Length: 436
Ligand code: NAD
Image 1 (cartoon, rainbow, N blue to C red):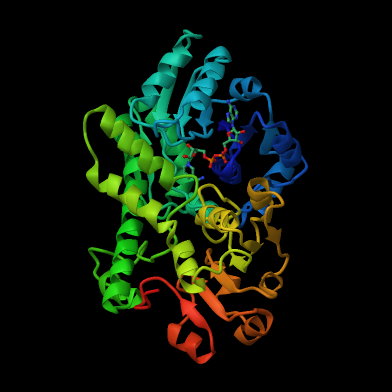
Image 2: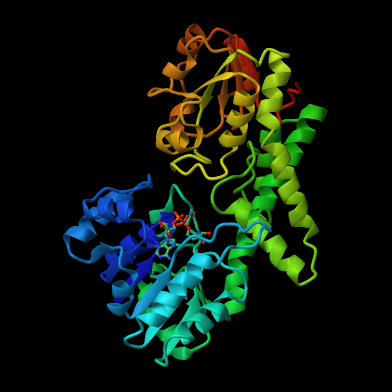
């Protein structure tokens, strides 16, 4: 099939590369000239495991091309995916400007019947607005469908190639048939391809993210309680995760959820509901707990350093909002580092992939270490923010010899508190009976 993917970000590039990998002719279009120029030379603008070889191979085979000309991409395709950003508006709702810009371009370049698929996360009713926008510019037949994306950054290629399910909102048999063919290679092992009405598909995506965010906030509250009553959240997690009704995923406490999806999608769903006079109390609480959680590491640190934050040297391990990505959008590291800098601390940060993104945010207000141990020299404390594999089993003796004080605040519960005590560290983590 001839496919255009408009918007070549974390989602669009993965979608384009994976659709090319299954034999389609894919053109990825984006307004960002620098990004497209780089991609044409095989330079991948983001860190995403497994993506680079896929892009390079399919480009070499001629199945994957890149352009800044959205109109020509639309004209050359039967199927058009809209994968542009839907950032939060001031009132929390999703800003649909980019989506509607693409709809306009589709309408203006409609030279044959096409299936237009919103892949971006968009509120209920957006497919209808896309349809109306396209129809302003053409009388030709077209179908609008919703195909929310559930991939996780850090495992995006794998998630797209082997999805738990594919959800498609359709309102015509013709579109359903085309999309059944397009998605067939990804559901060969029997994972479901679920067709539903468009409004339900649009709402499914928000509901999934809101539920996962709620689980995280729930466990962060339980972790707080564990600290007060002397319980260990790791044990509680095992105890409940083995219940098949609950499941094991998304039960780890942490420094608050971040990234480009959960925070904005929770807010957008709250906003959608408010517009219909429904108050989503559970999600309002989820969001409130998360705001509070993003302050937890700073509070633990300042409680421990007891007024010595100013002029202290603090090492940060991990800047990305989670491991295996360079994405720093709404990362807990951003609120932590901002608070530390405001309080007069000197921050030395390490991250295997997110230093470039961090420089865009912090510039030269903090120091960047090329190597994880380089960040530790003469520091009064280390804060672990992201759960990168290389931080899981470090050389603790080396760490102690480098640091001015053997103090660790661990936002990911990577280490064993008993062992840390034996090694001579003052160790603070989340929900393991260690109130500060
Ligand atoms: P992104 O910011 O990484 O990429 C968006 C791209 O769209 C940018 O490259 C931008 O230049 C381009 N763009 C904007 N307006 C355009 C236009 N009019 N024409 C052509 N290109 C345009 O965003 P993302 O993280 O890939 O997210 C895209 C959508 O997918 C969002 O709605 C997001 O909520 C959703 N989503 C994201 C993830 C994720 O993990 N990142 C997962 C599932 C769904």
